[in-house]
Structures are given as C-alpha cells and as structure tokens.
Image 1 (cartoon, one colour):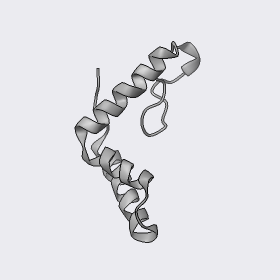
Image 2 (cartoon, helix red, strand yellow):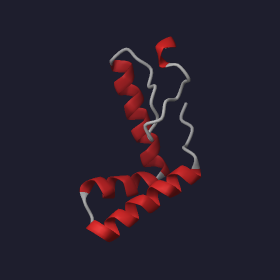
Image 3 (tube, helix red, strand yellow):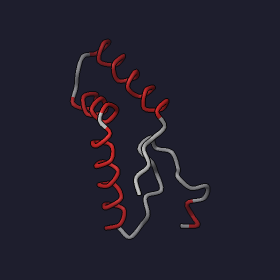
Image 4 (spheres, one colour):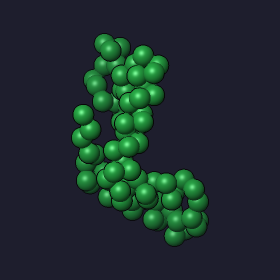
Length: 77
C-alpha cells in the first residue's frame, strides 16, 4: 500500500529543482521532478509503476524514490 514520502524531503527536492532551473534553465528531468514533487497522484502512480517493475523481476522494491534503502538488510529479502 502506498505511503506518501516525508513532506520535508519532498520540499527539499522541490527547492533543489527550482534552484537548478533558476541557474541552468528548464530541462525534462527538472520538469519531471517538479511534477513529482507537486502532484500526489503522480507520485503514487510512479511508486505503483516501480512496484510493478520490481514484481515483474520477482523482487520487492528495496529502494524508495530518494534512492534510500527501505529495509535494513536487503540480503534478507
């Protein structure tokens, strides 16, 4: 079941993206991250997509959207 990410992490990522765009201009990657940060449904769909990909490969998703491990020891899973 989907649980939204920590609001502080989302806000920090949004600031990082906006700072990047201010300095270097808009690009597809920064636009996608801003969409991810500002749209709950988009985040949920992205999470569901990652879970489906992991399931198709016969694995649970061990990494969240920020690249952090979800479990202490992935070797157990």
